[in-house]
Image (cartoon, rainbow, N blue to C red; front, side, top):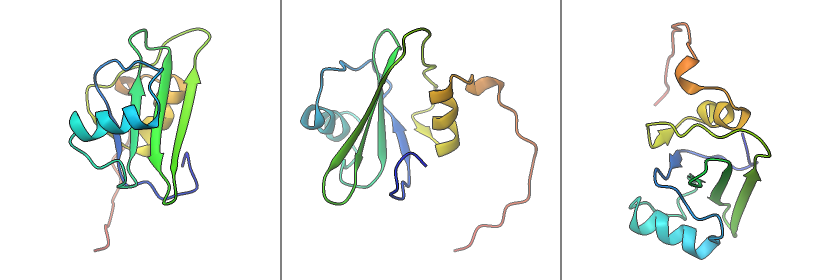
Length: 112
């Protein structure tokens, strides 16, 4: 997990984002473009046009946290899906091509 706080959903903003944007501007994108609530506790992921910078926005109960990373070489993959798992986010940050990841089937019992 990226932060100590429980994150329910990981949303990728599909359009290239200006990395000069701060908290208020990113919250505006979340509200107006993604139609999501930035106070939800979900993590919102933004990637720039050159795909070498990533910013993540997360409400932590008493304020926003922003994670920012700029690659010196290489690029981030921009997945087709706008909803990621925490595992997919970690792969994205590590430079693993999501399409190449194959998982064996496992039994999973979800508690209600």
